Figure (cartoon, rainbow, N blue to C red):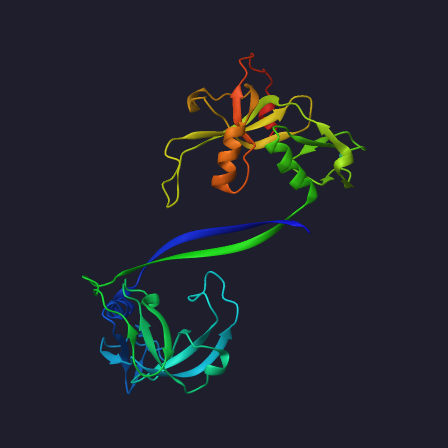
Length: 325
Ligand SMILES: [Zn+2]
């Protein structure tokens, strides 16, 4: 079976709601649903503009619901972690009583067979509401709103936080698996092309010069020393989730006697003002204790911790700066 890595990246966003959606979200904290009058009809969720003409609508809000009728639906048999419920449910367009347009929300029905067009549903409120559409946990079959209680928002809701995220799975080639294992053993996996003699590391499965597949039979030992060829000083921006607070260096290390340049490596115990091209460096590997800790904390074993100066004289070569790969 092919090894895989599952990754999730999340982007936190904040948006202003404006006077109409803000009023709608504020009403949700009060367990109320409101629409906006547009001539002889009521639009829910409310809009600032008439969708037919683009004309600004007078701010005349109307209470609607809380019950309504399903106009269309689709069944979600296998919810993902981003779905509103962790068991099978329906997404439905629901026209709330007193409204002339439908909103989209989840319906927590027992089964697909319990769903039908025209069925009556009502909101199940969360006990704690913050002015977000998910203040309604889901709609449920019937006429009566459920849940709720707790406090309404003390002030009008004007902003909304949300996190856009994507989860993806990447297959990991056999060379990359062996490379990762080598790192946890305190060594670099090197692969030497039989045609041109260049060496590669990091699990690359081919020589890009000769288009030759590189496998375990091309494995060679790589030195754990090298020279700093280029660097970046990173000044951390304090975005949500940032754990770094002080400027730090990331360096390129050209391993001795090879064609391997390792990019974006951690440089440890060196003040950022002292980082120089030409510094001689040695790899620092995780201790057994750190590996055990890391395996528990990160779900995988750490290998390379970073690089420290060897104390040897700097290499004087003006072309070093160009060796970044
Ligand atoms: Zn080659």
